[in-house]
Length: 274
Image (cartoon, rainbow, N blue to C red; front, top):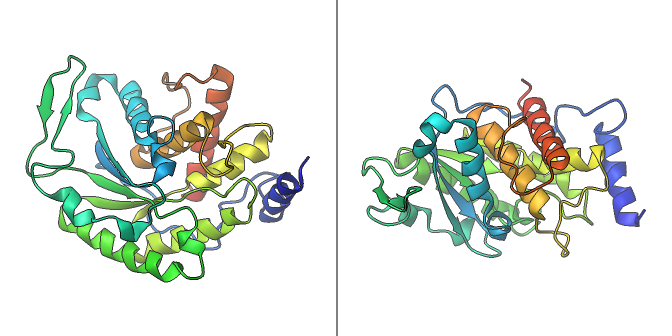
């Protein structure tokens, strides 16, 4: 076992995520917002970076999970992704993403017919992610705090709800898990925004099954399994429904997919203290 992997499990053990079972979260602060219900969203814009667009786009996997869970209303679910490689909150002109007749203004159905979006509301929620280390970087933390508020205010001004996506630790820097969890939870509370605990799901999955390959070769970006785990966590957080048993498996073998679905649901339930 490598030194970085041993260090990773030491962090998990110290935080209570191994042995007797996981604690509520790897963040000292508890999330204030724990649900988007009863009016759960069906249309989302994901604003972020390459962590979102790897593996044909994590948001697309979210929509496929949503449609598989609610086939009678699958036409109501729609997702749009705006991702800039390496970007932080401050790289994105969020105001421009809500301008009329532009991003997300139309999509295509299963018969390839164009479907135009209602003009009064483009998206129910905006899921936003800072760069992978910006929320905890000594020089960039103030930018994270500033633009978490600025972008949340913009999203609300356009009738949507802001949501923060808590990213995962690098494979060789496990200490980032607790740091990112705390930073995103605080930002969520300060902006009355839901936080999706994807980073905690990564830590939990590796605690359960260390041989899982959740990372690409660079130890930062997600493998397909990592993307699917993140998508299941997003699905659980946004819809309030369990992904366990969902028929969409993203081409992953069924035992692994079921494990990832279970981890996502357990993580969301623990983080939100359900």
